[in-house]
Amino acid sequence: MDRIVIQGGAKLNGSISISGAKNSALKLMAAALLTDEPVVLTRMPRLRDSRFMAHLLARLGVSVEEGPGPEMTLHAGEIADTYAPYDLVRKMRATFNVLGPLVAREGRAKVSLPGGCAIGARPVDLHLKALESLGAQIELSEGYVEATAPKGGLVGGEIELPFASVGATEHAMLAASLAKGESVIDNAAREPEIADLADCLTAMGALVEGAGSSTIRIQGREKLSGVRHHVVADRIETATYALAVAAAGGDVELDGARWEHNKVLWRAMSDAGVTVEPSDQGVRVARNGSQIVGTDIETQPYPGFPTDAQAQFMAVMTLAEGTSVIRENIFENRFMHAPELTRLGADIAVHGNEAIVRGVKQLKGAPVMATDLRASVSLVIAGLAAEGETVVNRVYHLDRGFERLEEKLSKCGAQIRRESE
Image 1 (tube, rainbow, N blue to C red):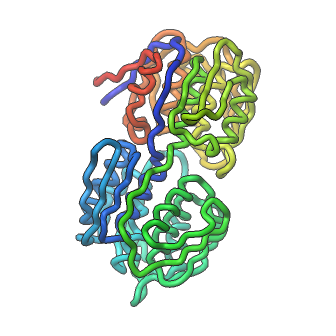
Image 2: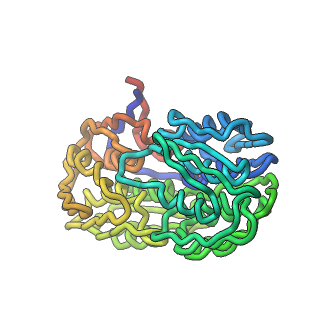
C-alpha cells in the first residue's frame, strides 16, 4: 500500500494545471449509456474513480478507450447486460447512476446498492423516487435495486426533491433525457457539475433548461446522439491547491480554474489574509509573510461553502491567529480528519457538527492515516506547512479524486514523494 512522504516548510511557487472535475466526469461517463454513438470526453481526469466507472461500463458492454492525452471515448453501441454487480458498485457511489440510463434505454436494470467513503449516511431513496416519478417500478431485494420501465418507456414527470441532492438531480436528468415528454425537477441542486451535465445532454439532443437554478426542465428524446464534450474544471481540486498555497505560503497560478465557481471560498480565504484574484489563466493565490487569520465557515449546498473543501480549510485554520469555528451542515461524520490533524499538533475540539480550531504557531510532522478522500488531502496540506517529515498512509483514498498530486505540487517546490510499503 502506498504512502506519501512530505518534508514540510517549502513554499509553493509556479503554476498548477487544474484537471477536469471528477464529480462531473463520472456522470458524463454514465451518460454514454444513453446513446449508441460514441461519446468523447476531453480534459478527462485519470483517477481511481474513473477507472472504477470504466470497469463497470465495460461490464455493461461499453467500449472504453483512453487517449490521446486527457481524453476518453465511450461507445455503447449495444448494451450487453443491464446487471451491475455488487463487486463493481460497492467501491463508489457514482456507479449507482448507471441505473437510470439503463432503465431509460433498455427498459430494465438490476444494480447493487452503492458504497463509497464512510462520511455518513447518504441514502439513494431520492434517486429511486425520481425514477418512480418517471414511471419506473422499483423493487429492493437482497441489496439490489431492480427497476423496470412501463411498456413504451419512461414518461416525463414532476420530480420534487425534499432537499437539493446533487446525485438525485443528476440521476433524474440522465433518465429524463430519454423519457417521453417534459420532466421538471423542483428543488434541484445548482452545482457547476449539474450545468456541465446539462450542456452535454443538450449537445446529445435533449433539451435541458434551468441548470444552475432550483428548477430544471428537460424535454426528453426518443434517441440521443454522440457528442464531444470538454469536462468542466474541477472546483474542488482548485480549492485544494489554493488552500495548499494558503498553508505553505508562496504564489501559484491555478491554470484553467474557474473563478466564479468558488466565490464563497475566495471570500473566506481573503478574510483569512490570503491574496486570491482572477487572472488570464484562471486564478492566482498568494501568501508571502502575512499571518493567517482565524475565519469561521459553515458548509452549505452550492453556491455556499463546499463540504468537499471543509477538511482542507480546517488544515489551514490550524495555523491561524485566533480561533475559528467550522460547521459541517451537509454530512455527519465528516470531521474524521480532526484527530489526525491533532497528531501534527493542531488544537481542535469537535462537538457534533461543529469544530473549534485554535490556531498554533507551528505544526510538527508525524505519521497520519487518511480516512476518506478529502480528509487525506487535508493531511497533505498540513504536512506541507509542518516542521519536519509527515507520512500520510492509506493514500488510495487520495487517488480516487486527485490526479498526479505529487507531481503538481513538486513542480511548485514542495518536497513530496510517494513510497510503496
